[in-house]
Image 1: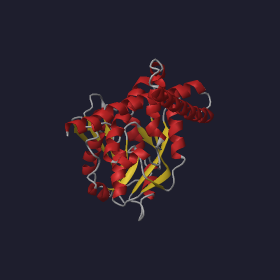
Image 2: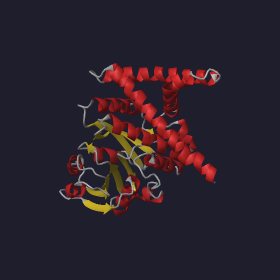
Image 3: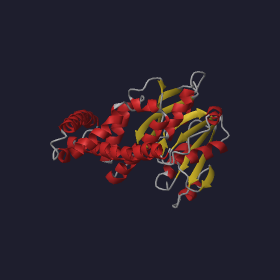
Image 4: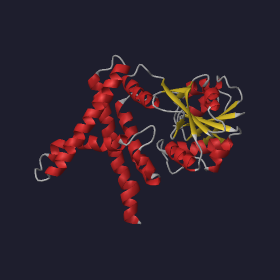
Amino acid sequence: MKVSIVIPAHNAAATLRECLAACTAQRYTDCEIVVVDDGSTDATPEIAREFPVTLIRQPKRGPAAARNVGARAATGAIVAFTDSDCRPHPNWVERLVSGIDDRFCAAGGSYGIANRDEPLARIIHAEIAARHSSFKESIDFAGSYNFAVRRTVFESLHGFDEEFTAASGEDNDFCCRLIDEGHAIAYVADACVDHYHPARLWPYLRTQARHGFWRMKLYRKHPRRSRGDQYAGPFDLVAPAFALLLVVQPVLWLFPYIIVVQVVALLGALLLAGFRLGTAWNIRKQERGLPFGYCFAMLILRDCARGLGMVRGLWHFVARRRTTA
C-alpha cells in the first residue's frame, strides 16, 4: 500500500535537510514525499530539491492550506503528515501504517526530542511525554506532526480547515470532524518523530500566545473541546486564566471593595501554583539537572502567554462576532 508523506515547510532551511534525510531513509519503501513550500524566503526550496521529492511552491497561506495542497498532489492510499522541524525514526511510516485497519482509518504517533541539550526544550518534551504516556489504543486527538489517514477519508472531510491560518488548532479541528463522522484514530506509541522543540524563551511564549488565540476558534467551532480531550484536560482551559490572576494579584488588592474578586483570584492563583509545582517536580525528576525553580517559572510564564492569547482570541472569535452579528 503506497504512502504519501506530506511536509509543509515555511522558512525551514535549518531543519528540513534532516527531516527529508529521515523520510527518504524509511524502511517502508512504497513511499512518495511531497514538500509544500509555503512562501519561504530562505533556502527551503533549494534544500528540498536535493532529495527525491515532489516540490510544490505557493504563496504563504499557512500549514493547513499547505497540507491540503500536498494531499491533493498525493497518489498514495494513505497520507502521512509530519513537519519540517521533525525527524522521523526509520520505522515511522511502517509503524504508523500498522495502526490503520478495519477499526481505525487514521493513526497518530509519539514525540521524541531532537535538541536535548536545550533546557527549555527538555521541559517542553517532558510534559508532552507525560501526556502521551496516558494514551490508550484509541485516541481523540493526534497532532499533524505525526499523523496518517486514509486518503479517501481525508478527502471526504475536505482536509484541514484553512481558516486556521497559523500552526495551531487545525489538527484538533480535523480530528473532531473525523470522529464526528464515526471514524476512529489509533495511537501507535512506537511510531515516533523527534522534534526540535523551542529553545528560546521569547519565541516559545509567542507560540503559546498563538495557541491560546486559536484555541478560542476551536472552542467556538467545537464547544465540547473546551471540556478537554485525551491530550489536554479541563485544567488546560482554566490554567491560563489562573495564571493571569496570579500576575494581577498586587493590582487587585489595591481595590478592597471587590473582596469577592480578590478571594476568587487568590484561590485560583493558589490552585494553579500548587498544580504547577507538582508538574515542575515531576519534570525535575524525569529530567535530571534542570533546576526546579526554572521548570516552575517556565510553566507559569507559558500559562500567562497562553492566557493573553486566549483573551485576544475570545474577543476576536466570540465577542466581536456577536457584536457585529
